[in-house]
Amino acid sequence: MAFAETDPSETIGEIPHLTDFSFHKTLPDIDFEAVPVTGLDADFYRRPVAGRLLSVGVYRFAGAETHRAWGWVGEAHCSWHAYRDPAGGFHGPFPGCPLLRLLRDGNRVVGFELGSGSLAREFLL
Image (cartoon, rainbow, N blue to C red; front, top):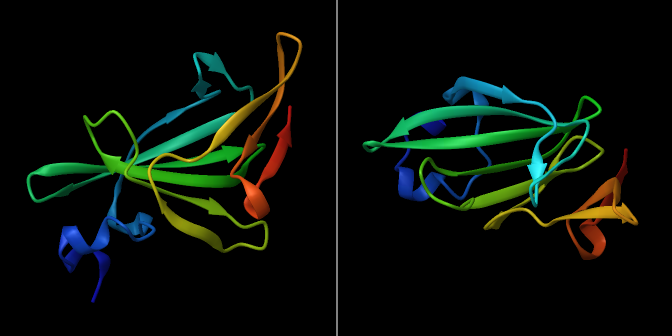
């Protein structure tokens, strides 16, 4: 059964199939904690589900996908997220927003860390 034909209560916890979504917009240098992260860009896609809009953000750093986060338009936080494995697969999905921490040298942002534990990866600007 295709993703678009399944019950939305069963599918929101699955990694979204982008072919079932329509492109919405691209945002360059995504803000985190009100600080733009140079080179962390996101493409956003939307899909109507049961009278609501499901949104997925596909985040890229230096052109390579780092993670996805998805949930309902209008809600303050992500419902789910998954980290892109450098080998091409995904780790997740996990409930809630992705874990992202800015790496700083004094007041200057020098990169970010995504995930935690064995899934943690650093991206330097």
